[in-house]
Amino acid sequence: MDRIVIRGGKPLHGTIPIGGAKNAALPLMAAALLTDETLSLSNLPHLADISSMANLLVELGVDLGMNGHAPNGGHAGRTFDLGCPNIKSTTAPYDLVRKMRASVLVLGPLVARHGVARVSLPGGCAIGTRPVDLHLTALEQMGAEIELTQGYIEARAPQGLKGGKIMFPVVTVGGTENILMAATLAEGETVLGNAAREPEVIDLAECLVAMGAKIDGIGTDTLRIQGVDSLHGAHHTVVPDRIETGSYAIAAAITGGNLLLEGTRLDLIGSLADTLRKAGVEITEESGGLRVARMNGLHGVDMMTEPYPGFPTDMQAQAMALMATAEGASMITETIFENRFMHVPELCRMGADINVHGASAIVRGVGQLSGAPVMATDLRASMSLVLAGLAAGGETEINRVYHLDRGYERLEDKLSACGALIERVKGA
Ligand code: UD1
Image 1 (cartoon, protein in one colour):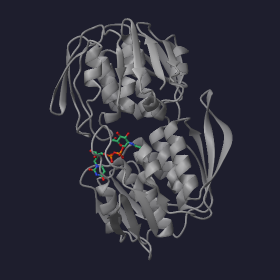
Image 2: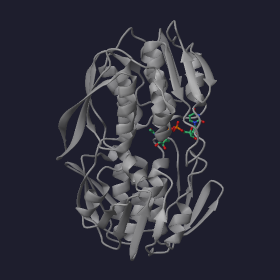
Image 3: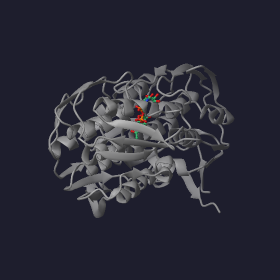
């Protein structure tokens, strides 16, 4: 298995291009199932999760054309043409869903367009149990019959889905996306209350509107969707990745460097930017992107993960690595996933002083971390170890690199172009 080896302690200087958002791209690709015309998506990142979704869609009957490269702030993201004149299979098999939970996003579009879907239950994952019960209850409220058999969700709506009032008891990003897609082709009006407002949900809603969907309240917690008979093709450019943006902002901060994050926007990282500024990081908007720099010391600040526009759970691990090197203490509270502190023991192996009490971690800054061999169990935890390694004295070796390949495009290239001593060592 491949490893990443970092010799830390070098401030990063230069430009890092930010790609399209993985978490926007996945539901956007699933939206191709809603129409028999071509959906063209540009600024798609080169990531393992995008390939997994592409494989699943091809299995369901999508013709996938890779259409060269589209310009994106000086670097190129991919363009896919996704056409689905006929749905050939309505089964999302275990082997594909197991690799990537977001495969469940094909459920809503399949039932809405074809009246039937069979999708493997995603099961648990490293950061918590992560059920899909809210997706299923909402589909039932829209008239689908749902059965769970032999590890599969079987959904049927032979007469089509019907609009209704759905109030999510907790904010769910994937649930909002799945039901939003389903509602575009349902009969009558669907109202989604307590809907997720993440930029990725907004991006999906805007693409659906370009495809002919009727959606009001985009960007608010109440989405009103008037069902239409059919959707048509469209072209859409994927929003910049706010988690990649935030991760490289922390790379600048933790190394005391100065980076231009190209092709991204401040409004996508509002609450993270507020937190970083309080900790002593400078963030300014420039034409072409965001400049992030740190000249002076860092100090500990508290943070609590919340649905957007709150502090993102997908930035918690990376922010913890930063706080581990700050002066003073920081309390980091995780409210979205119950088991998302798997990076703590690994950061402690690098010299961090972190104690977990229930859903909160007390991080006492130690100034300097020291390199060590480490391994992580999920994508963002792996990135927190990369960031810690960039700041640490000596050598850090990160195992299970496949997690990083799911969500960070050309990680070593982007960092080494800014002076990081980082390389991938091919395993047997
Ligand atoms: C998405 C993101 C993920 C991010 C998360 C929260 C994608 C592909 N993934 O995941 O990176 O960390 O949002 O911002 O976009 N829940 C239920 N029942 C459900 C659905 C969710 O109890 O049916 C709970 C979850 O266990 C969790 C909370 O709701 O505690 C939020 O989960 P959700 O927003 O649905 O996360 P995902 O869409 O899976």
